[in-house]
Amino acid sequence: MAWDFSTEPEFAEQLEWVEQFCRTEIEPLDLVFPGAAYSRDPKARALADPLKQQVKDRGLWALFLDRELGGPGFGQLKLALLNEILGRYRSAPVIFGTAAPDTGNMEMLAAYGTEEQKRRWLYPLMNQEIFSAYSMTEPQGGSDPSLFQTHAVRDMKGEGADGAGEAGGGWVINGEKWFTSAGARADIIFVMCTNGMFVVPGDAPGVEIMEYPQLHNHIRYTDVRVPGDHLLGPEDGAKVLAQRRLGGGRIHHAMRTVAWVKLAFDMMCERALSRESHGKTIADHQMVQEAIADSYAEINMLRLLVLWTAWTIDNSSTREARTQIAACKYTCAKVLREVSYRALHIMGSLGTTNLTPLQAMWASAPTMAILDGVDEVHKVTVARNVLKGYQPHPGLWPTEYIPAKREEARKKYAGLLAADPDLEAWADHAARAMARGH
Ligand SMILES: Cc1cc2nc3c(=O)[nH]c(=O)nc-3n(C[C@H](O)[C@H](O)[C@H](O)COP(=O)(O)OP(=O)(O)OC[C@H]3O[C@@H](n4cnc5c(N)ncnc54)[C@H](O)[C@@H]3O)c2cc1C
Image 1 (cartoon, rainbow, N blue to C red):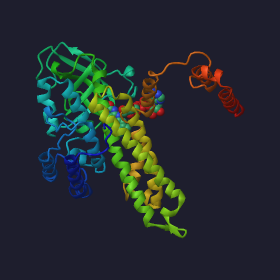
Image 2 (cartoon, rainbow, N blue to C red; image 1 turned 90 degrees about the vertical axis):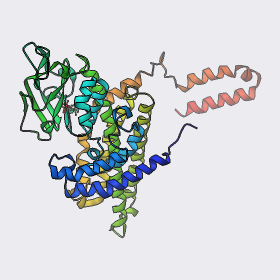
Image 3 (tube, rainbow, N blue to C red; image 1 turned 120 degrees about the horizontal axis):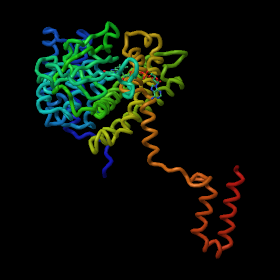
């Protein structure tokens, strides 16, 4: 029997450990020292590094990477089950070595990097010795690659930014990028140019971080020189690399969203049982019950869509699963919007403050519908790919036009109808009765 919704006991045990570790170690760190897990401050590292070591000792570090690259090689389905827990806690992804934007960049390096590029950037990224950013979106062109202008030309003059390139073998990059997450603190930035994906040191001369926005940076690249070996993958291969990078990231967002909406749901149910209004507990009011029932169904629909997609990736590839991944992306934004709104609403005035996670969760729903590609683009992908499996119907009537189908079906019984007047009358009567309904 191939359908199976259970988790194998050894992995279920790991999940239990993760749940408890997050509750007893990561949540207190987040509440008292927010940002410590991301900080380079030695005191912050002294708090976070032992937690990272515990994760490594459990064999759970960098769990999105295959075994040969230093991860546990769990695959996407197990990662989805883990992310259903990690997604609740702000620092959990970095403490488990799975924080964006580094994860997507590491996947790209793992897939397209030379041995030397992996040694120089992938392994230090995995160990969080360095941090990275991904510079694709442009101020004038959003994320439509046909509008991108950032371009690299071959450097005929000299060495690249870190002086490691061969004379004359490097590149000079010019352009402007928008909303590069964590760009200001990145050691290396993956810059998508019209003619290739380049790795640019964050401190290279000509990399200029604009004052705003502060978390997702606006960056100008002016005559930035990099050595020839800072081109990742083939020349003109940036679009393929970008797809590889973003495909994985989108399903990871959806996995973490399952964690968020489950948290919102838990808060909604607890509150509904805890308050009274107009003579009953809130949970006894039918409209509150409707909010709970709808949320329950929507969360489980999203969860099953995400798990099925993760399973599909494990059994084929990210490319094969691209229609499902696109569906996960806009569905997770929608379920996040609906469920966090209901939970906030049931929390009443308290829900509108920042004293619970609900306000921030609801405010992040529009962001989820924009980052890694706006909903509209993913819906177009799904519709186009799904339509490839269909054909227009020949003639005037759709395939399921019942009178035509009945005529066709009568041919199967032609002998019987001709031989038995009772059966013929029955069939004629049924056809007339149906016609009268219209
Ligand atoms: C939190 C966050 C983090 C991000 N991090 C990064 C990052 O690290 N690196 C990076 O390069 N980028 C990043 N982005 C940028 C992100 O990829 C873009 O914001 C996104 O692709 C949309 O581009 P835009 O903001 O220019 O919006 P636009 O492209 O201007 O779109 C605006 C609106 O126009 C409509 N629209 C646009 N295109 C279509 C279409 N094809 N069909 C129908 N309607 C359409 C939609 O309503 C859409 O919401 C991040 C964005 C967010 C919100």
